[in-house]
View 1 (cartoon, rainbow, N blue to C red):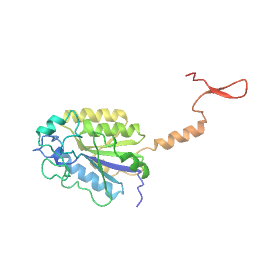
View 2 (view 1 turned 30 degrees about the horizontal axis):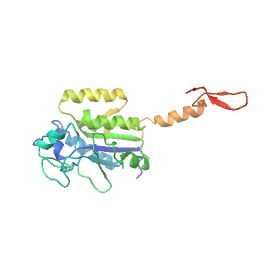
View 3 (view 1 turned 90 degrees about the vertical axis):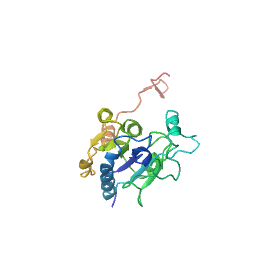
View 4 (view 1 turned 45 degrees about the horizontal axis):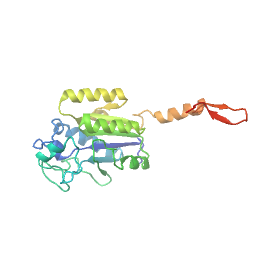
Length: 233
């Protein structure tokens, strides 16, 4: 099967250190989002949409931990180190472990795109639409969504497969992401996701550019027959 949707599913930070309620880094709503995440991942695999598990792994000396998270990470047991297991670990939660054909990306900061190879691989796979699930909506989902938008991907967010510390934070951030232009779906609606779900905006823009024949810059013809931009700077 071909990836007719031109999409990729990005699963962000669904590891024990962010999901298990014993962990100091636990996101309160993350655990209840697991069934929706599992449903979305399984649907993506059936649709031949490539699945990327994007996660954190921290060095034990703290040299790569964010400035704003360092004290909490240090006092919370130096969590999510390489090869770690248990409630405070970088281990993927049950039901959301990579399978043959999936990708794993280790990210150093919130966004799945920041200093990772994600964009390079997506372009090699000719992906145009990025589907985001995981935790947390105001941080990792949101920064990944804005980076994807800046990199010219269409953004789809499966709302009930994302999580925040509170329902109010979740609602406010989903509203902002919708205003940004993200397509917001439920995991149930994602059952019907296909090649027609996301409008091919790139194709429309290129077609209109071709039909209009408008030059990207204005130039003036000089007396000697050469041309110069009217941008004097």
